[in-house]
Image 1 (tube, rainbow, N blue to C red):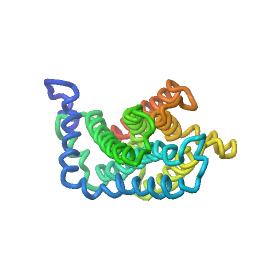
Image 2 (cartoon, one colour):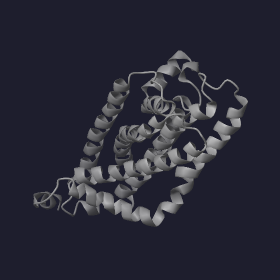
Image 3 (cartoon, rainbow, N blue to C red):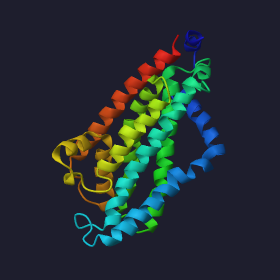
Image 4 (cartoon, helix red, strand yellow):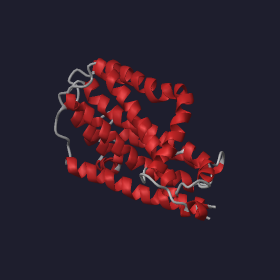
Length: 266
């Protein structure tokens, strides 16, 4: 079946098959978007109010001379993008293999494995970008964005979504049980969110933990987002940040493509 599907000619743009997969998930989102409002939007805003306004009111000097709310928000932008990416790249991917088996149905069409992967990953990026766009709008109303360059956080979180989403797709396609997905949140997402410079400077960590934080893709996105929203230079090289995140994305794509082919090509 897969071989027959591959042999069919598909006129038009080479992106059309992946776009069809993206539209499939977009149609589903039109019916279910209300269920994700709290986790994707209201919860980060409440965090801004609790930490940025509440806790920040007790930090007289701010952080690095910047009011705590303005210092915190770019970290929340990056960590929210991370959590949305991982949330949409774990159980939905696992379900498409193990429970509803959507991927297997898609291989019965002229779709290739790469089309299936690209279309689903594009939908995850769409979710990340729309969530962060609204988040930027709301935090801007709180006066938490000190620079018009804050709009550049959107391409940053898109690259973060690729850097995190692609390897997470590979992981979700390979694990035998959904218990492993919960472990990913417990041992990777939560520690990254706590110690990658979101709530306090990484420099305050012990040296060993500091280098672990630097190794995470989240810290690189946090540094870029903070530079954009504050209108300052990042701590590290912009090109270095982008290349590091791109390396994660490329490696993750190759791993995900390999994992998908093992499951879908028979």
